[in-house]
Image 1 (tube, one colour):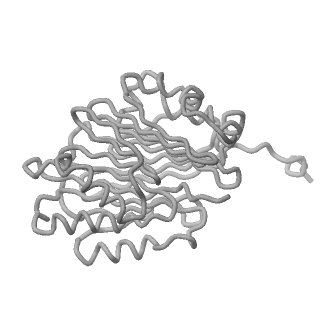
Image 2 (cartoon, rainbow, N blue to C red; image 1 turned 45 degrees about the vertical axis):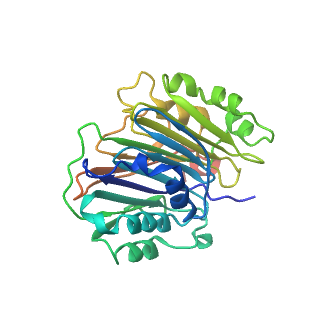
Image 3 (cartoon, rainbow, N blue to C red; image 1 turned 180 degrees about the vertical axis):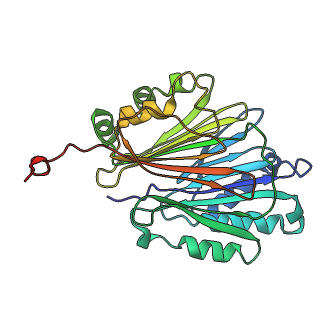
Length: 310
């Protein structure tokens, strides 16, 4: 059974004097989510953020910005267009839009391509697009408004994308009739994310999604464990370099992926791993961020034939 775990992502920032996005209410956001053919499963809230767990990934809403991730064959660009329709008379209040899309396992099954997505957006926005990474390997597409924006000094994002997980933890994640509590324990989430409120969901026959919030900090994790196309993503705005436990190092060691990517905005990432760094790109963006992309591959033991010298 194939499911495309690779995500598409929107992050949009409004002016501080704009209407609170949280005040728009759940019905508004449910409609935005429905535009990309997903639905809200559950939600958690605190004084800073509303976090919605979706049938295909996650949505986080703060007063003046929102972040939405979707996987499968969702058309996330339709959700962005629906949001822009609502604020059509208030475009000047939109300070930043970033749209990301990573390479898929089976891109021919997607309903749109990245090129088609940005062609839609360019009809109403003025933006620029980049590809980070090699076309014949892992890569990430990004499109953003081409206008000046100064992010807050603490505005940093860290993304870990893992492929072809292996080992005992991976084997458990492929078993049916799983329990969310056992998965949280397996991943050690309560210790990795102390003081966070966690909301999670186990799909049938398997698959796992998690949102966590603490103040204005968030973390989200999505696991598509199918053996031939496994994919795990973890994303947070918690500075993992200052964290007591390096979350990325822990997850890579636990899930033992064949390869993984790290994407970060306005931050370097330090990780301990036996994987080899295959590619890295640093791209300053005119919207005020510096995006970094790193691709790692598990070191393979040399075959007997490769060890024979003539």
